Amino acid sequence: MSRFFRRLLTALLVFAAASAFCLLLYHYDNKYTQSAPQAIAGTLFVSEDDLAAYPVRSLWNGWNFYPDVLLSPKTCENRDKSTVRSVQIGAYSNFAFGSTERTPHGCGTYMLTLLLPETPRRYLIELPEIFSAYRFYIDDELVLSAGETNAEQYRSRLQNRAVSFKGSGTVRLLLAVRDESWIYSGMTYPPAFGTALGVNTQRAVRVCISAAMLTLMLLFASFALWLCLGSMRCPPNSRLFLLLSLSAAVLLSGPVVHALKALPVQPWYTIELVSGYLTTLLIVLLHGRICALPNAVRKAAVLVCAGICGAALLCGVCAAHLSEWSIRAFSDLTVLFRLAVTVYLLGSALYAARRREWHAGALFCADIFYGTLFLWDCLLPAYEPILGKWFYEWGCLLLVCVLGAVFWQDIAQGYRRSLTFTEEQRQMARQLAMQKAHFAQISEKIEESRRQRHDFRQHLRTIAGMAGDPEAQLTYISRITALSEATRPESYCHDPAVDAMLYYYVSSARRTGIRVSVRAELSEDTAAFSVQFCTILGNLLENALEACWRLPESTEKSICLHMKQQFRRLYVVLENSYDGEVNRRGSAFLSRKHTGSGIGTASVRELTHRLGGTVEFEPRESIFRVVLILPERADEEE
Image 1: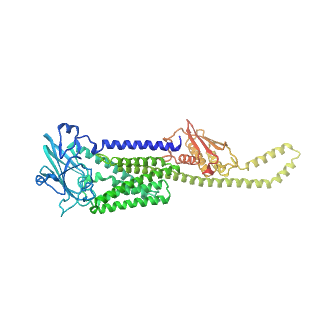
Image 2: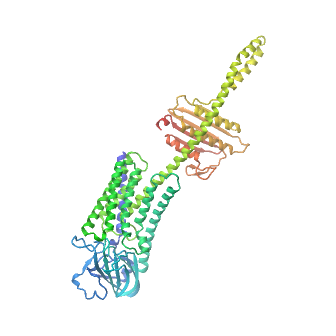
Image 3: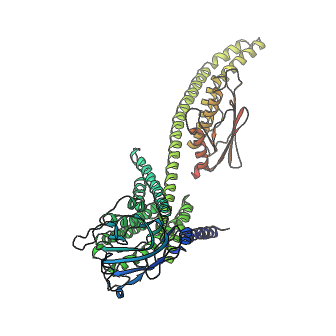
């Protein structure tokens, strides 16, 4: 299957999964799709069977609404019924009711009559944020108030609140509302009504879900802050991810904050509004950096997002003076903006996939999921979550988590590369010391050979003087030959760096009583010998020496190394004695010198993978075997 069809199949599967997720939320976590009976013409009949089947319901339909007046239980009796209209909560977001000729601000009164069972019991009504000040009556009693509804002393206060009452028979709910400060007005979100246990349980679950998401974002922010403050050199994108986590935390904190404290509209709701677009801006910026998009494309995207953030800030600050037309224009603009963001994210993920970036697949799937949520958000406008989050918030949460996972992988890979680089530096320093020692040994042997050549004429005269004694001549010649062999430098292969390393480790092993066997069948023009290969070989030989040193003195210790160049590959087999104890965590070997994974074996794996080779560690009963295969031209390609 070609790469194009694999991507297409992946996109279709993610789209199907995201669509199923949205439809499940729409049908099972939506205030407007509950099957509980709703009010008709301002009256809701609730039977015992209804309460047993639906202990909690959202009161979204059939409210009587009196526009432009603030009524009380005393004044509503004499009110002209011709001005009343039946409204559906959530159908319109303000007092303009979709008309550009009406102002979105002002006042109004909602009224609903409940026909409850004759048996008295305790009920609970939950009022979400009601914009932006209200007085709530049950029958003739004022049970809740927020802010100040009087026009002269108007003061906004919003909070998610609940009130309980004990009732039976006919109960009248009356809510007088005024808004002069926000783009929403009146009762925008449906209240919840039911038994005290049912409503309280629903509220607690909602707050717990929001608190869990908020905690996750704060943990991300704490991790990014620790990276920024705990390192001399701040890892790339850590500050950006810190800002993204904090912005997402503000975006997702609404239910928790509004359950705890009553807040004025300004500046808190402006901050909440801007946080959503700021989160999108930071997602776009971090996404573009991770996918390594061209600077011009990233700058253009950031400028567009910054412009929308500025428009959201202006809309929030000037909310009290906006008309219905301007509010609707801003809403249409945000829809186009989210569509553009979806296209940008998908395009950047495909760009990363073309460049074979390792994280392109995860980002592509997350972007498809985000785009699908946006699509269903447009197709299903009659959605308000009971327990969870809005589609847009779920999409942002997913993108932040995926970007956090990619960021963590980048940090982990950087840490592994740092360890590998440190190990390379250590091996390079040791290799230099080896080469110096090897050079000193060769220089010593050469100097001794020069002295022997200088004395060779004396040996010839001595041999000539023994012309009458052939046996004495042969004995003398054998002694000269032995001296000559002793002055010849010991060599294992033609590569100077590898030869020096082998000489160093073989000498160290023999000095401690370890039997060593080395066979290196390498050609002179091999290109596989470089710093990387010497680092790999040095780590393997060092581990082999340490394993032999751990054995008791009476135990036979051995190291056997065979290297062969064949079929444009370099094959290395190393076997050494060891005590049979192996500590593993998955495929990684744990160090016996410190806690955590062994740096030497991790460096060998990292460098071998970087050079396009393979390495296998095969611990047996008393022999530890390592098989290494490297392409002959690996270093030139690297």
